[in-house]
Length: 443
Image (cartoon, rainbow, N blue to C red; front, side, top):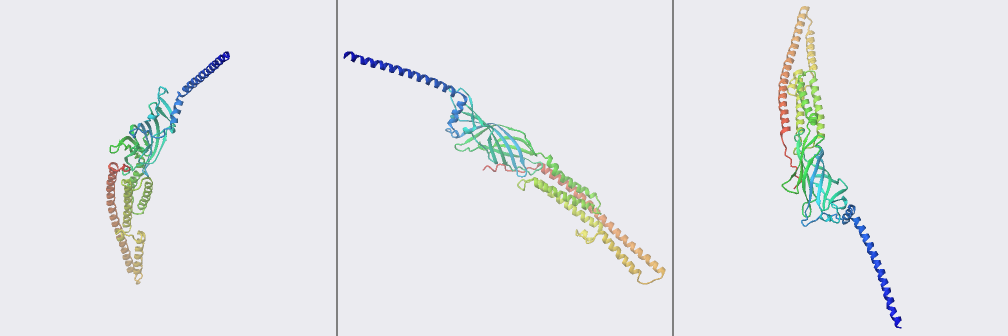
């Protein structure tokens, strides 16, 4: 019994020892597997792509919100380009390309774990700031790339492109010598409370000549020394050669042709027909001008007034020429009083001659006389008839001299007054400045 009782603990001890040995082997095996697995996991997560995936999984789509709550957006470089200027509707079409830099501390990482200074992330996976053009009618901002650059300290760098159609009341008073400045107000979505504010850096103006307008300069400026009212002041000037040749110069040439038309004779109607043609041609330029220039306003183009004055000159010159033609041809009181006559010069002369012939025939056929008395009477009638024709000819020549004298006086008056007017109008177009409030969108 004692031998059997002493054998049982020995068996139990051997079984326990065997169990402990197996457990130790299993533990060692598990530890080795864990060590290998962790080593492989650590080698995978230390790549840039694993780092990018780790940052993407954070899903930080909201604006970085520090204790101050107002976040700084740096714009170290911006490129401005004027695409076109709509003269009819007073619209400035612009393109801006900006480099943005901001800091999101929650996107930073430990370089001892991930030994990289920069990583590329998709734009759609983190928060990105928005820029607005305050005075833009239509503004679209798009990313220049699908990716952005993130540094280990949380600094984000990205480029955006802004296309804007801006309402700009360009001073068109001096057209075709117009020049003015137009602001392009740049700001973040808000600068109050938990918003963002911009810190602008370098600005470059590229390709400054588009269509009839030229961008002379573009620079940053602020309104009322406020940091939230930043804008790009764009200095524009119209290239005057094309509108000067197509609009202003033809008005000068047409009026000059009207002045030279005084060299044509008053009789025959050639002068009047030529002046009517000039008036009709000038109305065509008025239609062209109406389709090119904007409507009336505070600083509407003075060339509209200039064209109207030129049209008045042409019409007045045409009417004076018609009246002087009537005076020279007929010498009637109706022509002198600027009213229409009922008959033309050939008809009036023919009527007078017919009356003289009828009187002569009536006098001749009254009483039959002898040959000598009849011959003497006929000679007297012929002499009287020639004297009447001579008197009428002298009368016509006198009226022609009066009409010619009035025509010369009107010519010099027209020439001197027209020259003074054109010099004065050109001076006003070039030198006068009409003031326009370009900042009425800020209140």
